Amino acid sequence: ALMQGCGGVAFHGLLRTAYALQARHADELADALAYWAARWMDLGTPAPGGRVADPAAVLRGLTLPRSKEALIAQRMLTASKRRAFAPAVDALRIDAKTLPRIARLAAKLYARSGNFTILHVVTSAQALHELLDWLAPADVEAAVACYWRAVVAGVAASGIDFATLARAPTPRPWDELVAAAIASDDDHLIKLVDACREAQRVHGGAPDWQRAATRVVAQGVA
Image 1 (cartoon, rainbow, N blue to C red):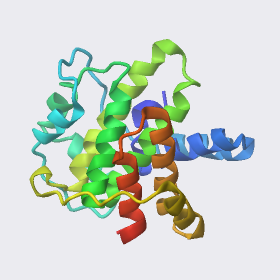
Image 2: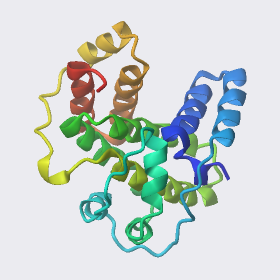
Image 3: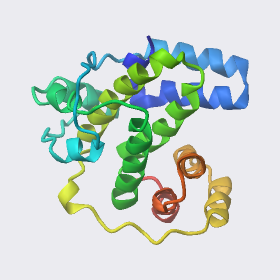
């Protein structure tokens, strides 16, 4: 029930819940679920039947103007009301490989853009991965479908242009990245490095995750 509103407050209900579970912190879990419910944001109901496997192919063809609201969640909600939004979202086929594909794509986009909104897609993708074991198997694809809807809204809210993305940085070693995160007092930098290290451990060895973590350590959170 909460997943349909997982984009609320730029995914922070989802993020807080995942970290509370990782820490086995019951009080924080209660607070996180209450926060998620209180800031629940409906972006519409997913429609099954998509045929496109690659989320990047869907997002490259998405032409939604970036709205001018100050908050990420406000821009996401505006994007979800555009006429082109639902057809783009519903074009993606949701299966067991969808979340890893979204996660890797988000890391690539962040590594090449340093975009603050995309940072939240990277961290929330890993947060959802942490929560999947707590869902009934029959509910997993529906949860990912709801998350994908929020991701599309987030990418639209980010205003990034696929045609003008910068080159990704040369990845630094993980020990350097982790040390930088430990030394930082920026919670977004810490979360991104943590999420990227965990995602590489879970999904495999391509350097996309290190590049994203390198980008945030090198430039900070814009």
